[in-house]
Amino acid sequence: MDMRSRLQNRPFQLGLIAFGGLSFLFLLYFTANKTLFKYLERLKSEFKSSQDTLREAQLLVKSFSNPQKALEDMEKKVRELKEMGTTSRQLPRLIQSLALTATKLNINIISIRPRDDIRPGDENMPAGVSKVFIELTLGCAYKLFAEYTKAVNELPVTFIVEQMSMEKKDEATASLSDKKSSEKYAQIPEELLITLLLSTYMVWEI
Image (cartoon, rainbow, N blue to C red; front, side, top):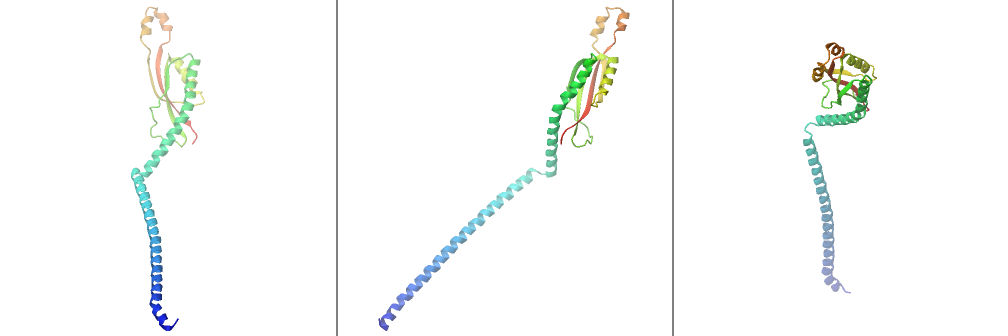
């Protein structure tokens, strides 16, 4: 090929080179933009996730305006549940011991029940200790009642008398006795209606 032909083909060759260069630059630009787009999308997703987490944390903080008090309330509920579990197991044994002591002395037990509605005052009790109350109503003479209190004091569990009321039993018994001689009536011990509110302490596992 002569020099003239080469010169005529040179613009075509330069055009091919320029087209190839532009194509490469366009491909490089498209690839870079695609990578950048994915990176931006990932950043956007992470930012949205962070915003959602922050919003949830803010809602949680708002729901506990006083976190310390909320924690104390939860601990109190846990203690109450533990006490309830222990009380439900131990109370029947305590009531049975009081009732059995009265039965041995032939004392009439009118009623005996736990008083769950009564709560201890501001006593500073150690952890794992709870105070329970039992209401007991007896019908007996004063002498028998004195023997009963002595027998209760000898039980392995210490009971504290929180309240006590004592009154004469129904006067109907006395009206029937009026038909009898005064000497015979004088020999019958006067029966009393005695109501006791007892308390004791129980130890439960922490």
